Length: 247
Image (cartoon, rainbow, N blue to C red; front, side, top):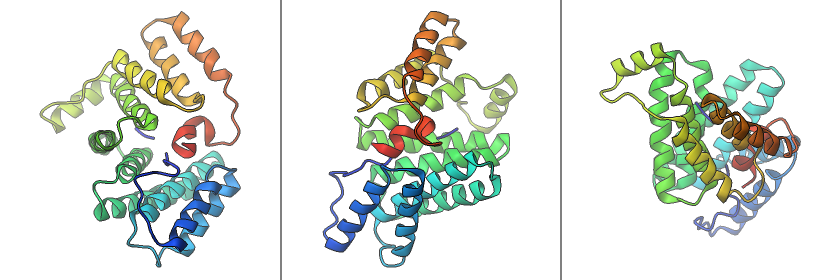
């Protein structure tokens, strides 16, 4: 289960000129290359102690840690990836503790919870799936027009729809109401993300294609695969988290 920063978020109300300048520099770097994203991460680390009480810094630390994990994963370094995934979760958790009304804090908590599933067993992954959805729902309540959140909700429903029989039975032993979702429901969320997205989004289109393949709608699937192929991959993390990183 997974896997944006809302750049220039109007809901942020930082008044410290130095902090505003820092966040602007970080956000500009996050629009750039993998090296730029690493520079954003290091810049935030330099000021972590100074601004440890600011949710706007902590969720960006969660985001940049997640991007560092993605980069190391692309390089095949699973140990460094795990280290950054857990670090991102730590920062997102701290951000939520500071402000539970911040949509970005909820979003990045959900993203980092989803990312750590790669390093957990089936039972823990299913439990984290519920946590993931809870925080995506909370973020959507705060920011209903955020396409990345609709994408994340679609990913949750897609993953639930693909659960094996054994995984469903296990979920039934863990929760009074085991997760239930269908491919059409996932498609609805992905289509909402597609309509709200300010730019073409490869991963969203690929998942739309997968949903249609799993339903036997092959002509629709081919159409979405063609649309996905039109979107260039600029950096290793673009195809997976384009909007989440560039919005």
